[in-house]
Each structure stands twice: as structure tokens, then as C-alpha cells.
Image (cartoon, rainbow over all chains, first blue to last red):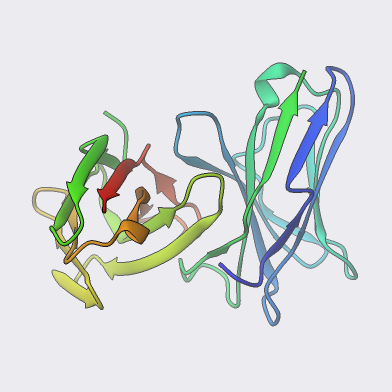
Length: 114
Length: 113
């Protein structure tokens, strides 16, 4: 999974604050995916983005969550007004082409909501 | 049970022994993948097997796929302490998108030196 960079690795927020998680894909990859891993659970798909486009956000909660992948800079997963249930590990993955199934994951960002 | 469910939940073996982990799923798939996750770290892609393949090897890893039984197994031969990690299977459902993987809860493998 070398190459997909996520930061911060750990983030602590109080209820009601905002969390911003960043992901830089591997070099040469233009497809980015966000997954969430709740404690004791497997990863669950959230959103798929290409530069400046959201391709599939079927796994994103309808409220408080948003994602972007601007023309320049990293992809950002934004969680507004965080609640304790948002505490999880958020993983970003990237691929060179879309829909090949070969995803390269980052180390994850672990969000703790107090 | 959910799509991509691993069995056993935990496995403890001695170094040098073989480790076998199983994965069952419910719907038809395009492919099935195995990942490793060391504690507190990201996922490392191990191997991908497509629905028309029955067996695949990569180093000390051997993966089988039985689509009639909707199951897969991951065999790690001659295990090492460094193999200690959680192992997840993930499926890409047929008719769906290959990037929308469904993960199980994983098998925690402990290899004792």
C-alpha cells in the first residue's frame, strides 16, 4: 500500500466539530475511493471520485458527509458536526483505472470523537 | 451471515505450520480478493482471483475459489511470525462495480515463534 498518503493518521474531535481527512493517491492514479471501518467490522464503501467528479456516492451518509477531489491537491473527506458514531478508521484507496477492482489502500485516518 | 464472511474469526498457529482461512459469500461475484491488515495499519492487497478462475498462487499464498459453493480459501504455507495480521476477503459483486468491494470482518491470524 506504499504510495497512497493519508493525513492525519489520528484525529480527535469533540462532538459538533468538523473533521477533514486528506488523501493523496498513488502517482499516476486518478481514481480515489473512500472506505470506512467501524470497530470490529469490515471496511464499507463510501464514495468513488475522479478529478473534479463524484462518480458514486452510494455509500455516503446523506447528511454531514461530503467528499471532493479537486483538480489540484488531495481528495478530502469532510464530516461536519461529528457524533460519537463517526469514530472509525477511514481508508482511502486509489487505482490507475476505474472499475478494475485492483485498489491500493492508504494507512488510514483514525477519527475519535469524544 | 454477511457477504464476504471469514472463518475462523481467530487462528493461532506455530511458526512453520500452514494457515488456512475460509471466506463465504452470498451473491454472484466478478472477483474475490484477499487483503492483509497489520494492527493499526492499512490494507495490503495480497491476491485477486476472478470468477472464472479456480486456483491462484503467489509465493507462499494459495487461493482457491469455488463459485458453486460460494466460498474461497486462503492458504499460507510455512508461516512466519511476520504473517501475524488480520486477513480479509473482499468481493466485487457481478452486475455491480469492481471498486465497490464488500469486506468481511476478517480472520485474526497469530503465528507464534
